[in-house]
Image 1 (tube, rainbow, N blue to C red):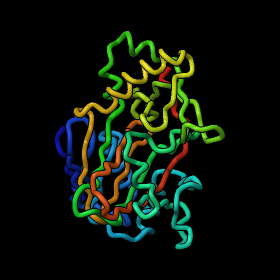
Image 2 (image 1 turned 90 degrees about the vertical axis):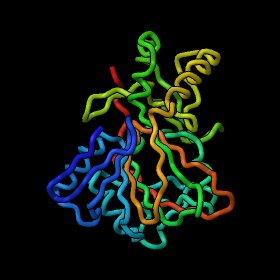
Image 3 (image 1 turned 180 degrees about the vertical axis):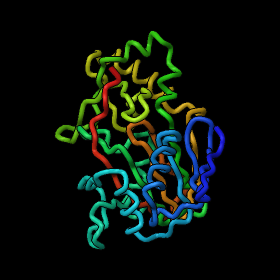
Length: 269
């Protein structure tokens, strides 16, 4: 992939072969309609975008997120900035333990009937070392499967739940979904929230999920980001998995998250 240069001096620089780009020369608190179109087109092409040097103001974070759809209030188990007037911004940090829970591959809130299409993160406190995040392209993961296995997946659904306990939020979603803008198909399973395939017995389900979870995070489908304080990232949450790596010992780490555009994943067929 080659960089896209725009006459507005905004430059989009790819970061890996299958996923990820950095957007340079654009302030997210002063977007024009043309800027929003540019960002959306780049998002559908690169799946995750990074905007460095945006500052720490949560108002900037919220205003940017609102360009991409309805903002969703976070689940009650997450700390949020409600006391500061930003109930929609969840705080994922070491001080409340939630930072450690993100250290597994997952799609945000896939246990909801209508998971957010987009997730928007805003880095606040960064360790001196470690604390990177990785993202993986699920369309390329699907394409990597053999045709017989890929055909088997169509029409199957999987259970997604927030925890392996009774009386917790859960939802059923197709194993293969379709992107509403590009038409590309993608896997929709993840290690943290996908418990089993509904139409298969336990042994079959475990075997197939093991294969799918392994291919979904192959290194060639990923990008790894070393954050900077004040950086904002947005990704296409139905079509990208991510993993916030816990490799920073007892250092503090805090990032803010906004969930945007609740939608049920579209079955591929």
